Image (cartoon, rainbow, N blue to C red; front, side, top):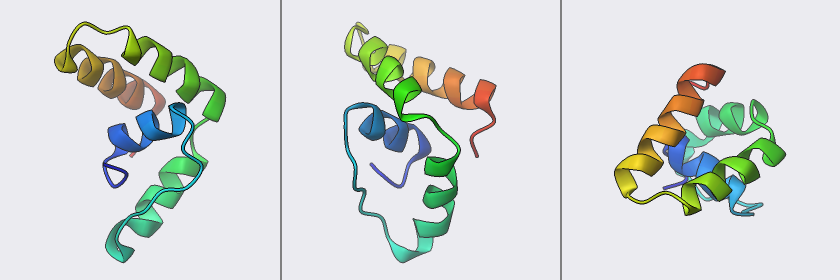
Length: 71
């Protein structure tokens, strides 16, 4: 989950301060983590927790990702 950009955003928002990813994904995820705000991710995670479906969570996270230019 941490190697996926949307999963990583949700994990950060839920309070994860360590992520485990393969060496292949490390640089990409490190760059993505540095490009986001933990405070914004907490707000996003709160919204995700109120969502009615997984599809709604996916739309929320992908919309944020696309609007924020997260790779």
